[in-house]
Image 1 (cartoon, one colour):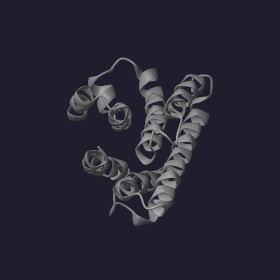
Image 2 (cartoon, rainbow, N blue to C red):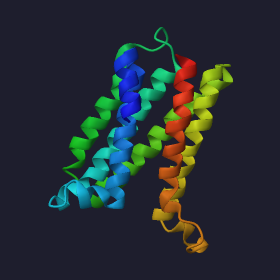
Image 3 (cartoon, rainbow, N blue to C red):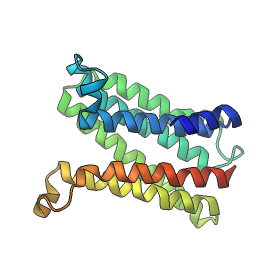
Image 4 (cartoon, rainbow, N blue to C red):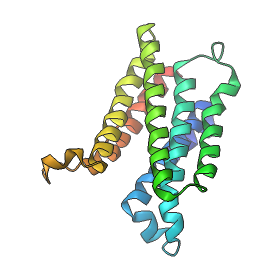
Length: 192
């Protein structure tokens, strides 16, 4: 996070702002999901601890979608206002989720995350088919995030229960995100 924040401050490329935001929101979600944030950052705020997962997940989806739109396109093909649209939508959904009962808010957050991943994957796949080389690295990197999120969702739904304790699918998004942060760095360097 700090490495890419410094890079953003040096190169002033807006794409790094989306990327740094995605890293921060993903880290916030993982820390909240694992209970580390509750234990060390906000031990008295039990209600916020539950809702923070939803907020972080929605904001991560919006920031990653904005990152993807800017990464796979050039400034001439997409108007600048579309770069911010997913982030604004995520903020609106995060504020609106507070009016929903918690189980529905969780389902809505996971649905938004799923739709955002499908949209990002579709955008990247379309650019790869058009022959954009830097998007191939993005697509390979993004596959780790996508697979990790799918495995974790299947685990949360109980579908992976037949594997028993032999495979821990709960850490799949963390592994996918960690690999993505490393590989996206190479993709961003190639793009710039």
